[in-house]
Image 1 (cartoon, rainbow, N blue to C red):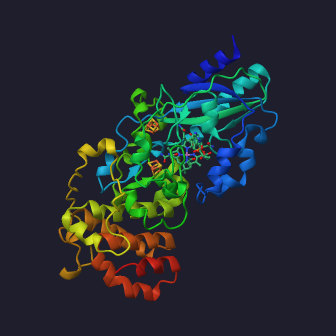
Image 2: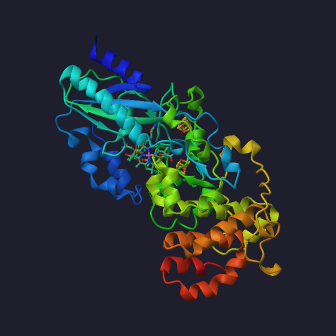
Length: 433
Ligand code: B12
Ligand code: SF4
Ligand code: SF4
């Protein structure tokens, strides 16, 4: 049997939904250089460090002759943006709702590459995301799909919920025809982005991308961007979810990529209680472990602060009084256009928490807390983080509390400034009225 046909059958048997070939002699030096020189890689210095090797598979492995590009479908079973209208829970991006795809796909790639080596005697190397290889343009060159205006690879058959992986081999395989652009005049993904992270179609500025901010970015998140993040606590799917090509997508069949129940709509209050050990236990084997506990709690605190602007009127009035923060700017899009027809946020559930051991005088109480309910529960869960050993967590806690209960934050300000040494956290306190 023809090697390519055999390879494709083996790939499908291993759970891949696409398997196509392109020549290793490709170079993406110019687009990579223009992206890097515009600082669109933000703090991902590793993108620039190996740019020569990243620009071309041959620079990475001169003996390589062919690149086998594989796609694995991780299409969601339910609307991935459904929880954006529920401020009391976090929204975790689809790809991170179960096992780490790197581990899963790497295992499958090794199996496939092992079979190819055994059958042909060729040398093989496998890649998924972790090596300097530009998987999206290579997948386009192999005809798996095209890079949409959101920059992610879209397949006509599978939509854009597709992980990519690659096998480089010394074997000369006949290349498949490349795919062409099918975005046309559509710009739904560009308009749906909550942070306007696309300076131009096809070009993503990571500095504004919630996926970057919540996963890769290490320090405090820009104050201007925080209100735009809503309750997105790990990654972001807005630009992917609105793409019309997903109408052909089927839900992924890989059991290890099916959403875990506890990650579909995790209550922020519950997540804020995670200490280091509990974080590790909950996210063992999950991509979420990548951020570590401190960065994850930072994200959850920002979502908690943003819950204030989704609360009933009293809560919104309170948060709007915070200087430098307050309401999301007019550019804020809590819900993408396609879903805005039903944009009325559901009333937060009355879960009846009260602030334990912290009675507040009437003139210092955020009206939402006075009524108990979500604002009070989030405030109670955020307060202990003012004493967190990590300054990024402390700073995010100040911001969240400043929005959940501005009067309380204001009352605490001077005493906290007297003992706080970290300049970043001091700046957060200074921003409280
Ligand atoms: C760095 C990185 C990120 C960064 C930067 C994203 C980016 N757009 O590059 C951040 C952290 C933001 C990120 C986010 C996400 N990522 Co990511 N990421 C990567 C990684 C490691 C490298 C990508 C890269 O090389 N970027 C460099 C730039 C130069 O490439 P580029 O986006 O392709 O941009 C150029 C093209 O668009 C090109 N171009 C093409 N056509 C045209 C036409 C015109 C007119 C112009 C001007 C330009 C142009 O020019 C651009 C440069 O200006 C890859 C894995 C890998 N090794 O490839 C995964 C990868 C791209 N990520 C992936 C995923 C799933 C995501 C998220 C969906 C996760 C989430 N839900 O939060 C988001 C999607 C955000 C988005 N809209 O891109 C998947 C995407 C799978 C797919 N179907 O394409 C990959 C391939 C990982 C994998 N192995 O599956 N990611
Ligand atoms: S992942 Fe989210 S923030 Fe990033 S470009 Fe897409 S919609 Fe914008
Ligand atoms: S939403 Fe429209 S413009 Fe964006 S990637 Fe999909 S087809 Fe292209």
